[in-house]
Image (cartoon, rainbow, N blue to C red; front, side, top):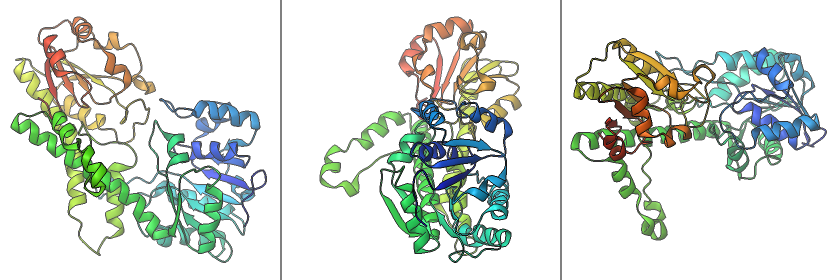
Length: 444
């Protein structure tokens, strides 16, 4: 198979944070691209020229407008669109079950069944979704073969090229980050590499499918473990009466080490109110699931426990602050600042705000949420803050970084207002001087 712009037809399964920008980038390069998504409203919005992703995404809306003029991209809910495609890219969600932490491949299985029933001979299928090691061989391949009646490596090609991106940097990440391509044959790897070179400026590393699976889940598990270390350092600093943010700065202050011994470089991650998003909270479980019954991981599950604890700890800081203020949390209005899991994003998947809100409500508080990027929680912050006993910051949106402490206190109109900072956005000294009882992760 030869990859040729203006000739090769591409279908993208799933038009979310991964599939939508990938579709636009290929369409910009002249490929005929159709996006297939089960959400009819999302498809209608895209075909009207709208962008299904809110938040600050540099260049995304402009790219959509450019592609719309080229008329190289359209969206549909009809799986029959796969019949015309020579390349099919799968970019659907791959969550884990809440109770067992095992993969919940409902969307993936449904997508593969639809693709298998409609794909034609000589098609290249690429999975960008993050999956547990072994999924390509034990789930993807069998479903596609059974539903299509075709044989992998003989009548169609199959590869894994896991995405590497995060909200707020979608186009930047897709175009500039190195990518790993793991084909189920050398031909599949080479053909996928020939395709991605049109939109990826970074290095395209060739490997096998199981290695590609491990690399993607492993890099997110690495981040999860590093964040857990930072969170435990925050808890340690609180216990010892130190400021974790100063500690972090001094640990990372190793310019000379970077110059002389880069292998010894230290880069402590950011602690916070919790880890969210579609990837990190579940990719550690996907990684360990791939080794189920083969070994017993220790560090990775423990890191998950620490990071899952942080919303509970944020709630504990709220309780401490109410106790210091001699106030009762029952019936108190508490405003949660930010519902998205990441700053300047509308992505609410696995947001730590949800468990925190649950803890607050169970304690009897009247919780009100504000988020400038999440449709359900937009509104005037000044109106929402009025009469609140406490503000609890979960998400470091830029809007919150420029708030006036005196104005906030004036709006709250209560004695001893409470400010709990889950992301080191506020200045402790300035907030305290303004009359707030301040509690911050790693700096109480």
